[in-house]
Length: 484
Image (tube, rainbow, N blue to C red):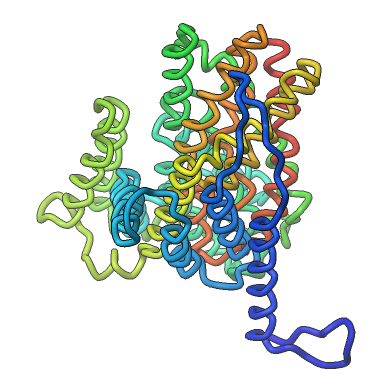
């Protein structure tokens, strides 16, 4: 692909364009490293300085974010750079080999990695068994072939699953369904506007559903724990849903309208009768595998819901193994090896590593005070809620981890609210519900990476749409919190 250089009548090859993007990313990281940053006053009256290690971690994070956004390097290659540069910042104690060991242990050995493996393999099973085809058939039957209703149906289904089985599990189920339907509709990856809206819509639906109940996403439970331990406030299951469910009900139509406006479908409807007939014929030949996949999926979901904290990763490994055993499973390792995006694990681990390094170096505390302290004292309640939501989204884009963002934001906002005499829960709530809504960068959530590997949308498409949706989230949460 050739691009026209705006100042000269010459053409730049793709490799030269990638080189320019790489240079811009490096310059952005160097600017962050040299940027003069003032000292801040903490909630205890002490000064907060950004250490040299924190500044270095900030630069590495900016480099990775810029490379992920511009796609100057493959996503997994950028993740490798994070593992190369983070130990050089000195954010962990010890020699360089000791820092590398701890960094790899905290990221690649994080329980989220085997959990992601388990749900991705279950996604392969759903797709290979034909269960995803059956789900698509149900949605198509109710939509009547109208592509706008197909998109809405997929978003609502993904949101409902995300309420109970985590957004990651929901995305792992719905992405193969959506990709299979797009293939049948002959929508070409990277070119189909409907393909972009459908895959992004599945991710938005899954993540938005995660805020509706405490069981939806891990950060929900983290925030509830900090409220209980630091402020003595017990938020019960229904208390959380009293805000989460109305917020989801407002967010889904907004998300649907944004996607329809940004990526208007190239067709109004498609002939659904022949597609349904073909699906019925294919489904009849694989009913046994569909039943086994459904039973494994339901059992896995029940295990994730009912198992004690910390057992999700182990149970995910158990169900991963069962997928290949005689009489129970039906997958071949060759199929799994071909269909699982193994680079996804590197990107997720790199996001966890950046978040952990930010916490260790003091960068997280500095940025949280920089972003939150003034808005709590200057803005009126409605504007404060909007600003807190937007600031949390920015922090999440930097830390690329729901758990890390929640673990950093909650223990900072709660004491600040107490010190200023504010309602702790209503001060914390805009951030609490925004922590899981990772829509700015693909690298922020494993859900986005699962959909990205289908090739239907680019990182630029995701960020452009996600920026608009993020702007909407703040006002929606502010309105819901004002009336509930």
